[in-house]
Image 1 (tube, rainbow, N blue to C red):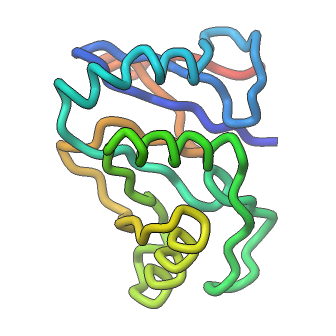
Image 2 (tube, rainbow, N blue to C red):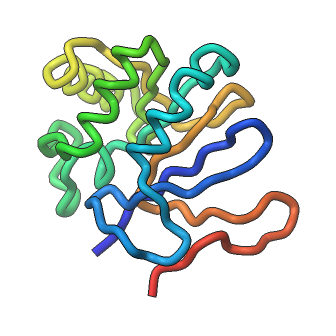
Length: 153
């Protein structure tokens, strides 16, 4: 089983939020929804940028590659977050390896329109405006140290 961690840079410090499946009590993990609400106003007023959300295994169910046209159904907890961010006027981009091929980008955007009512930007590149990356494969390290922030047992 894999978990998604939320890595957020907030006012020059980093935090780790809940796994996407809602597990609690894992060492070094805090409640992501509570932290999200606490910082959402400050983020919107003070930080300009975008939130990256991985597609397969983070925002959409993924149980193996079934072709470019197949994208699983939305994962409820992540879909709820994305809808909340969009309602707050935050920019959300789908961060996926599928962005390597234009045809796949079109499928991802159509999927977003179906489930979120909008064709979100799709990318596979970070830039200096990225505020957060939600992904099932990330491992967070402390800046400038290489030290892992949290590890699952």
